[in-house]
Image 1: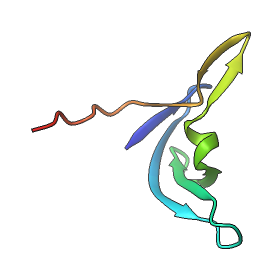
Image 2: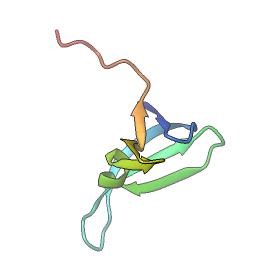
Image 3: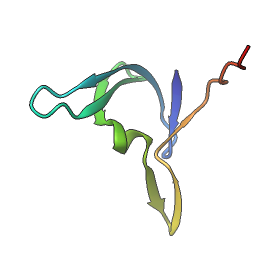
Image 4: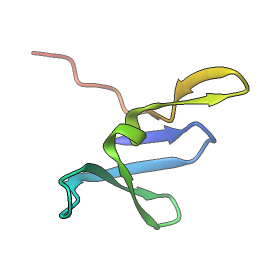
Length: 68
């Protein structure tokens, strides 16, 4: 699934993984420039405060399939 970062970048989620040390859930994602990033799941899906307004850090841009 693709997501738009609140600063405008587009990213594709590669997978969800877990840190070996403490089993923290992380999201592995790749930017348009080909760089691969890892961020804790809570931070990836959590909100950020921008100019006093709370918004999602990443917003999905692919449509969610309808339930059959």
